[in-house]
Length: 63
Image (cartoon, rainbow, N blue to C red; front, side, top):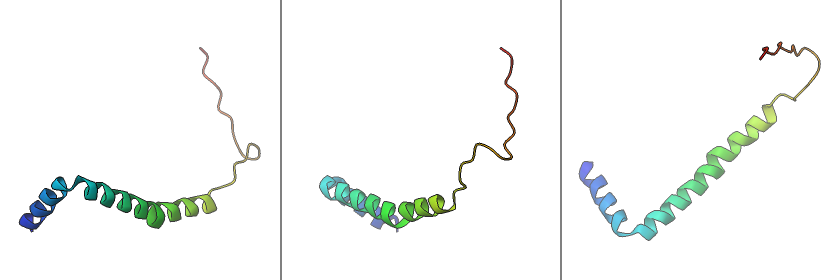
């Protein structure tokens, strides 16, 4: 397995344009398939911000 990884690394080092393209595609897919759904879930499940109700203000420290 190490030989295959070494050969791929050498090949991509020689083809920086393809390495950059692969990274671009990977980052785009990561954002579309992983990060975007997570952002939607967080936004949907985020509690509403409330400045009243059961919020207790802590006293500030004297300077």
